Length: 487
Image (cartoon, rainbow, N blue to C red; front, side, top):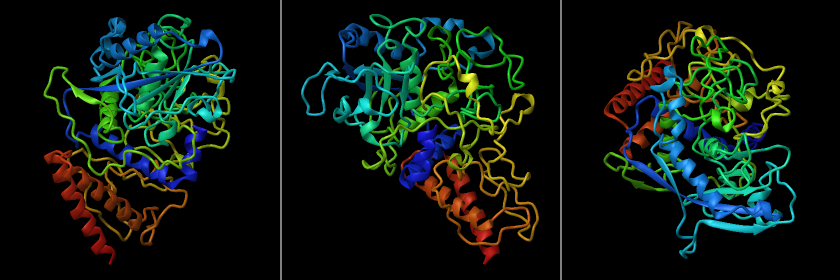
């Protein structure tokens, strides 16, 4: 989390990239973008970085991990039968498969595995393993391959990943050699290949299911069908485990994005699949090929989406964001990151030693407990936002602004607005005149026009449904109305 927040505050380009990615994910979850059918097969290169013979894992061990990835992301894992009955209907096939690359970046045949000898006795989460200059191996082009580095990670770290939108030179997943695959050096309780499943989930823009708020109840993974829960689960919990008033069924601790032992996690949800598919249609649209999996093969490519971040980004891996209540748009994490947040917390996108996670809860994190297990919005999200700003149904983005003289402004920005994630360190302000209730109509206009532009781009790319096009027209009309009232 610390690296991700630092990138948000230091590099406006990274912030802008993350904002677009989250807007696209929210549009997909709202049903406003066309969903493709078929499966996507992703070419994988595994970089084995070893100091001693044991770290130089075998081809067979690598093949066992690719098999697990294919089973888990296609919902073909044998332990899917262990999903508790209340959650069985939520489990979903991600329609993503993986295959070791057959051609390297130069066009030469390859087995999809590189092997690099190093003098480094244990890497950390600082991305040194991803560069030959620091004892690791350089990434293959991130817009063509999923890069996975396997090495010895120090300090009990099992793995970590980079969210989409970060620097291409460090894009990919890292796993320790004792938590990769199902044979060879893979050691219990992390010998079922689920560390890589978890980390590839992050690479496809999934967050930790508990929302990275320590053991509080105010975070969100921005997925509607995963219940709120108080922090990560470890080991092998007993169902149900109720936290954050999420009974009777409790935590979805069997989800791949929790922290349980490998044999305790065995599902993605439909909402998580939607989020991953949005990632493949957006920031990772250039990677992979469409293959049959029971439907017409269509993979629309957003033409104007920025696929790769500038190469001069800071070389740190971005991390998971926080969880919010009704699981709508992400928030301004750069603002609400407490300075003492999770000092011992695993690196973002990291599935590492789970023993002391409960101790890492930041003292000053908002711990408001939601009612009825609903994932409430963190208290510091737009602190002056009026209570009247409630989300409308998907097909009606928002009502026309009312009472600019101080009356209630109902959902002025609509559910598509993402003023939080990716906001530049110096917030822009268009216009002035903040109302008594704290709403700045100028800011509403600025953010609203950004959304209209994004929707227009999606429509031109054929990714917006008819309902979405109609809603965009309503949004534009309402913004024109608001602008005329302010003039």
